Length: 595
Image (cartoon, rainbow, N blue to C red; front, top):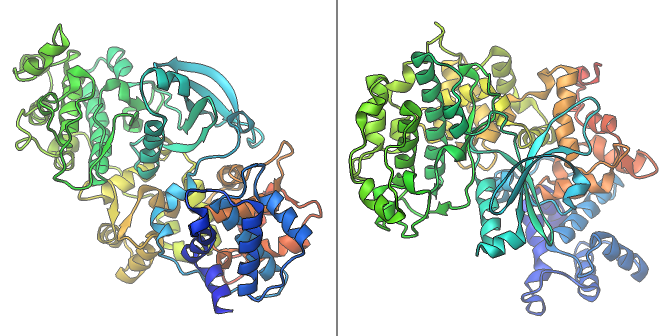
């Protein structure tokens, strides 16, 4: 019974149990269990739990069901989903009792967002409808797309980057390099790093689904400025540079250097005519990015776009400071409309970047803006400040009171919701995180402001100390703040990521019924609803297992649904919402029922 309870309470132990059959000598190099291997390992597993073993025909049916139309056999993920569903059934049928609260703070919790953003195994056109083509590059095209299972009356367009495998082959780019770019993006969690929602792969293409950048790229924004007023323009420039440096600082703290920062790779998720205070920029295209293991690592792989490459990149020996240089080139371009370093021939660029730019070209900007640019374009890496240091520059403070009032750190409603995060059930917190991975960061302006204000060391995350200090300054007691911090730190790493903060602030209980439905529908889409908007209960269990929910965290209402719900094995969106009606003390949240 102890082993059974451990599997229901610990996602790490459940994963290790699922991996056991794949670690035998017989399975070396194989990623799929065929029926004889499956039959042997499931019998051994059930006997170990002292659970009756099904007849041969039932085992064959289980194998066929869980291999998900894969003729090769059952994967680790398939086998884990099978064990998860078996444990759910045992609790729902009353054979065993729910063991209570899950372990929490496990190894899988440290990478929970990456698990939530796993590759979608369905065909892309089964999930999304194609819209108009937005652009075309050397590797493929970018399209506007719409989820097929969309809530009635809602329009939430997304963008899909389609990378042709044949074109990648022609360019000499290994397919694994594309997968590595996707993996890097899944690791990065910051409001100003382009937000991805899921990815697909088939025989012909890779597909990456991202938030829509309605305002175009920085190149277009500079060529067609939204204002002719020089003070307003510098305010706009400072916002974009601050947000770009925020993304760079965060990436560097995670050991990622971009290596190809340029105006075409900074895009606006905000509309072109947005107010300056609502401008939201994101850094895109991590195709050339490198991962550094330590702050002392150097790279020798010369790559990038020539006018934006630092002197040390041309020398073939550089660190992450090369990204700061590139942002400095962009700032010069934004303030003057001219590039500071140009050459007629590629081989002349190493000399061009060693000459001083024409500083008079940015003479119309404030002295603070000019000094910022000068510091970023220092030819010596040792003298060039880091992105984290630059974010503390007083130039960014110059416009914080532009409208006479500084922005509040967090609106009172969101603050109250955040302070009550420990009252939510584990299932509710899990769903809030699932929703948070699927919302556009560009639409969360107040939350983004709060995140930036609380991040006092400007590394792109909130340490537990930073968040606790900020909550106390907002009026929370030290004990209350400590509870909130513990709840938000899912992986017990001492750091709260952007999406963890977003999930904490996004209190579903305090939303209007319509807002709540729109957000919960984002989670519902992850369970693959059919054309009637219904989802198989088995699919919900499989998706929850894949994302690391434990059986212990499932609400009793869901387990009851497994036995007493619809006879056809499906669940509706309204039934799904009711799963969130009960918290851990089983008190009804009546506001969920309001229409």
